[in-house]
Image 1 (cartoon, rainbow, N blue to C red):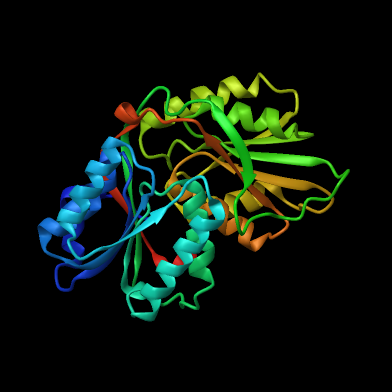
Image 2 (image 1 turned 135 degrees about the horizontal axis):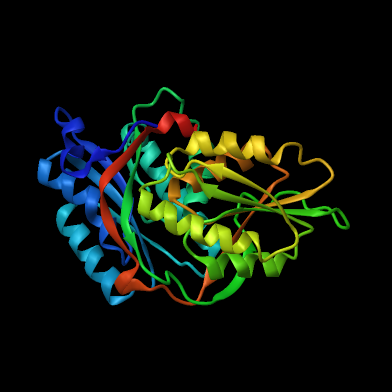
Length: 316
């Protein structure tokens, strides 16, 4: 992963040919950052946008803005309360785009996909037969600032479809947490799964989106370190490089034999992809998702000034 590209200059990399954009619109303003930049530069050649079927006022307004920027984009609804339906909708839309010849050259804006959706997206893409030599790219707009808090109380827990793992009764459980900016969510996951061991990860200072966000992440990390007796080990991971995060997980977890390993990615979407890459290589590992009652929509995040770009082929 190279350094982020300034958002204002991002679209110039597509100057000589239009690109198909695949994105997720949410209540976050930064869900429009990539689409706006590409539309203003005249480098869009169509698109596919996912949106929640039940939307807030902010999300509805952002979807209208996206549709104005990319008027011929196909809109696919996702029900966040129905993971099986979400997986089916993602698979159907991506399969159609692949049949039309768009996927290999597409720009995947992962900025505001929900983590569960993003992990499903990764598994689906790897099953479509794309080769690592495709010219598509994965892009992520880092946050400038994050709200406090980000979300409300946790209302349920589930394994992510495609990442159920192989849980063996009576075997000890290792819970691996890629800590982000939701302390309450992390605590709820730990208390729900009651693991025998906790392996807690924090974004590295040189591989975080910003020094300010790293400081917040580290503060939550320090609070958890002293709270749980089962927390026996810690490690650092890249918040801005999916393949690096996957390798760091492999090193930190080691041999999963004889243990039930549950992975909870709670940091950036790039590190979430890293968790997905690790789990697909180690299919006995389960990835869990904790759904919440609400989000702090008005203050959730602001868009940073940089776009992280990586080859789609690295995920395949």
